[in-house]
Length: 61
Image 1 (cartoon, rainbow, N blue to C red):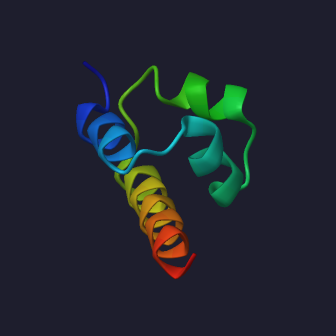
Image 2: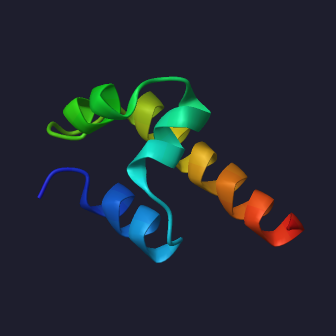
């Protein structure tokens, strides 16, 4: 499965792909299309940072 680790992190964090897409500044559909293929290392880093930001926001609530 492509981007398995990313998908597991999103699921584990109880987030939705649209939330991650919003933080990185793209549409949900664009993010979904990107996830069909293995992400480049810099894109993986960006997505993981977005997940971290969203998790920190949840803690602050």
